[in-house]
Image (cartoon, rainbow, N blue to C red):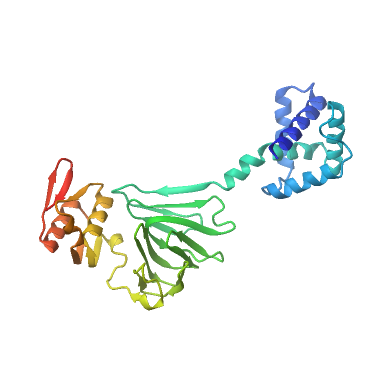
Length: 315
């Protein structure tokens, strides 16, 4: 396909040069500018449709493209006649051919927004939905977001406040897809953790295991037992806790808590004894600053943190 585009572009250049070879560059620029203002540009071309049109013309032409220059030029004139375009639209078509790949790529590029350790970020999507990203998290979506769909990918954790819209809002994760129309909900999608909780509205979660629906104040936190029976009411107020500088723990392992501390404050925590990772913690931990959080974890586990060699050791 690339060779065809180059061939057509080269022929158009030859044609244009022969028509306007006596025009100065400044006049040429003005001509193109004036024409562009008068010409209603077509929508972003579809590569497949463009190829079908060109293939049709090639298939119905008696000219062999591979022959000498004069024969090729005859084919080119036939191509112009087939499309029935005048000089003004010739320029528009030329620009379309030359720019089709960059335009196509631009419309299919992903926009990526991410946070590092110790960062948190709130922003507005093109549909006016609001997203707050937790630490070490990212979302990505195409430039066509809110044009033909509202689909994004999440890695990490985010709180969503979705604007109502005829287009369904879909969050894609490693553990399943969440579909909504307008609601407020939280999604955590990490390596071995998956949690979805709804503050307002309703969402549908689907993966290879099951399809379940969550309503107001419901959540699911059990990745291994993903089904309707494991839907529970949100067990604590002001969900999700991290938005309100709180970490709610219900038999949460110390290993999981330490991973969260590392994400929030960009530090390293090591265990003096591997068995300490399996200690479970129940309670509310203030995560507004590192010192308060470490002191609370020490109080709940009866194990202290010691800073040494650039890392924190729990002993």
